[in-house]
Length: 471
Image (tube, rainbow, N blue to C red):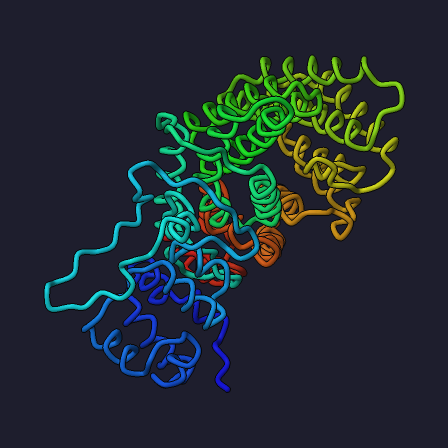
């Protein structure tokens, strides 16, 4: 039995074929790289060998989502490839409500009269298995190198922008909460794993469905829908911050806060206050950001009697966000006060956790000390703090990568270009998309190229070229 190489699904030509729903090309690539004959492809997908031949020769087209599913299942297509094709990932199947135009961006291509079409009679139930408005962006390769991911990300951001701004559609049924909660959890976990392209793909249909749920559900279900919306918009704002899209960040952050208020959940309010604080910082409003975080944390702290792990984690994360804002505002005293309060919350928590997706704990406090020392221009102190961090204890890849990037910047400022490059490479191994998809990180690479001494100049330029960064 032939084994289909996992990397085949990440090849640009395969992604292009899936996005175009060109199954003739898909089958040809399976033949070329997996050694599958037409008979073998037919056996896996339930298609006659003659049908496979006609598809590969361009005499027939596959247009039915039922057949898409059969082919995807037959060849064990991974979730990233399923998403590119327009199918829901197996790990987060949900009946997301399609747009009213019945198209969800997936109208079948018009075929010439001489070309037969396979499966034009798919039903509405199968159609609802699509994700709404997917752009076809797939996961980046786990290996850092030249990719077309910037192009994919740009298309994904456009679809996310549409989901944030388009009018609410009218529907005749409410979405189910349980699958929506599952996809929110997947989006947040994917963000923390630095799988940003996947997050950008998941968010547009998720946000559309959550808007509907918040409008049509009642009682406790509506409260739950608002909690999920607060979290989903928080993720959207976080992704947009990394893409340096200030306008959409503000919109998503505000939506998160509004949903949190509607949920009447104090923890959701505290969590959403974090993303508003970050958005204020990104806009240069550092004093307002500091005040917002400090006030929100004070309100939370005033209610504590026997705080839970969730309480301490959201509270501590708010204090850390306020400390970073105060450092950017140049307010050293407030920075140190908020840092010390956060450290106390970390000690009370007593472990490295990821409660309510905060990744809060004593090591996270140390990571923020690194960032704040760097912000205040003290690269040496930043590196000293970095040496105290137990990076293996950090619970999420995004936090590990952020620490390494801050440390790389500190080494660059300190004139240790070789160490800066080494640490930057380490960040790329942990979280490739943190390197390849963020403008700020690519600027760091350019800075390394410009300042690299002769001893590491060639290595630095080769690394930059591997990322598509022009020296």
